[in-house]
Amino acid sequence: MTLPAIVEEVGRHILFIRGCRVMLDSDLAKLYGVPTFRLNEQVKRNQRRFPEDFMLQLTHEEAEALRSQFAMLKTGGRGQHSKYRPYVFTEQGVAMLSAEAGEAKRAIVRFDAHAL
Image (tube, rainbow, N blue to C red; front, top):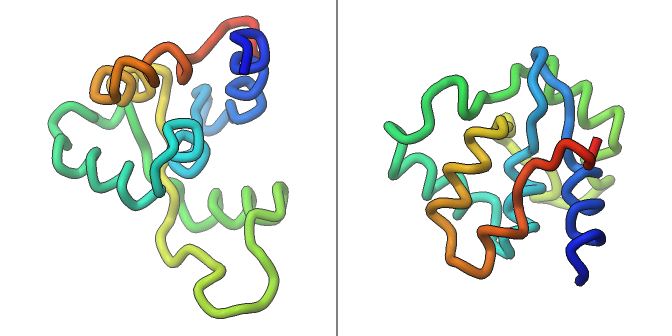
């Protein structure tokens, strides 16, 4: 994937929530090539590196609004729906995740002013 394609892909996943540009944990996990629960597990292990201005957990209302807006839930089947409210990461949170990721992934996932 070329750099412009990567920037465009990242740009599609930037949301505006509570006045901040953020990315969902599930979108970041896909971009890093790891399961969402592993990404969140890594964050919990290093919780002091992720203060409130780096990441937030969506309220039930915000999560429901995103599910309905983006049809995040699959229909039918057991285990298709996340039982946890998703986390979102601000630009600083994404930078911290990148610092913890391997060299190859660092340049891929970053906010870009031109991506919006």
